[in-house]
Length: 98
Image (cartoon, helix red, strand yellow):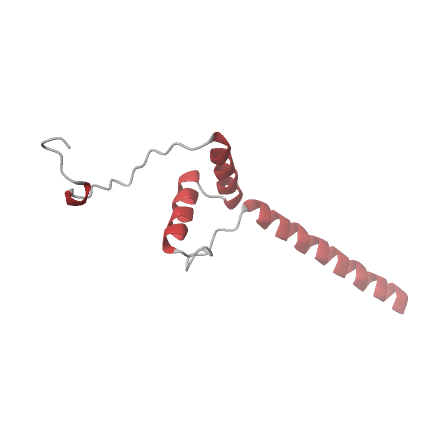
């Protein structure tokens, strides 16, 4: 050990909130896809995922996850299809009744 080097335990923590992280390209791509699907930045997605992992809360805790834009569109399309089916059923009942 160098003469002026302190043991790791004795150093003052200096956590800036910045981290340079190297990862496989495929993992980077997967994380980017997931963050896009959830409608959040890659940074927000990684921070939220790491926070859940560290806290042991795999379900996301008290903060609800934002609905992805794809899911939102699929729900709207589903509601429109159900409304059309209901209107068609009512029209058929009126025609059959008369």
